Image (cartoon, rainbow, N blue to C red; front, side, top):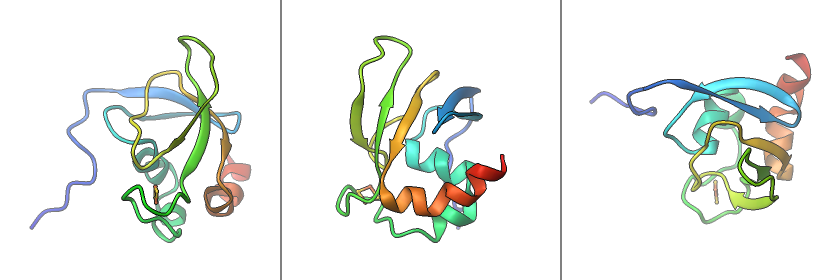
Length: 102
Ligand code: FES
């Protein structure tokens, strides 16, 4: 059986994570795209991927209205221009070191 973590890609989109810019696949969840950027770190993190643990919460803005929103990123689809401005303690623990290297 072939595992397909990412749906077929139409294009890459631009997002920022704690002030750093990245290109990520569109049409998937924020958490899946964080795994795209930080594969080992997210895969080894304490995430249920099923809207139960709450360890994936982020606060973000979009280009549209600039309003801050909180969501569980395993459940929310990423969009072009999204700016993730705060992440949960677990996400921060997972990506901090790699993020500082970029
Ligand atoms: S990973 Fe558990 S709620 Fe999102």
